[in-house]
Image (cartoon, rainbow, N blue to C red):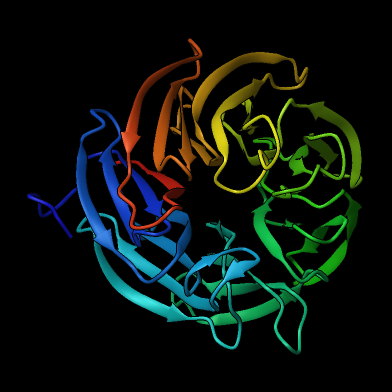
Length: 349
């Protein structure tokens, strides 16, 4: 770790994974100063902040490479103290592998980790006790490649997007069992509205080198019925979706290089953040971001958005009230893929 400070508890931080680093970079969320770079196990993807314990969970997904183009699946969950910025534990999720999506239920003290299929079981969600990090259960999602995972505000329901399967998996988290499918043509990111009424799903999945399976956009699922009630159309394929505390729906659209081969991985041009209003779902703003937006998060007050762009290895900081770029943060990388998962970490109170 490269840092001149010993304790960061008094600062709001933004943590950003570098997939090829492999590192987690910590920025001052107010001044945007880079504070520290922490080395972590190979191919970190997503982050999740545990406010009760002041620690950060980091999923290590592959030995090297990325989905459908890797040299083996990893099985690490790295636990980081966010005040000292030190690794305190690495949890081995074996016999499961390729952890990716992370979700924390603070009320029941449960950490959910999506994992890919093994030779004997379909993809699923591993349930850990957040205090001990011991395994409680494993819930099947009935698909090989679950990726992003989100839970309802009350912790009773969970949803998994599945890249290859034509449905979103619904999980009953009170009974820890598979509860159904919502038809969606292969999916990427997802986010639940603050009131729990809607689940917003990016679909279809991104296929590099071929045309999308359906018109790209955000499928709006009514949580109570499991029905797709609306599709928010976008110009480009969407990977990340995020909802702010104020209810804004943020979508990261890819833009592709025109001409033959323009959809291949690595040929993307700068992307676009599209912002939809709560309830009406009208487009209220569009802001340019970096190449291949892959993850989005926001500040606790919903005023600032952060877009991690994996191919340019940058984070675009966006003022969501004025719909303008505030600054662009650079994230170090050792290969083609850079900035990926993010977490906003408020100062200790």
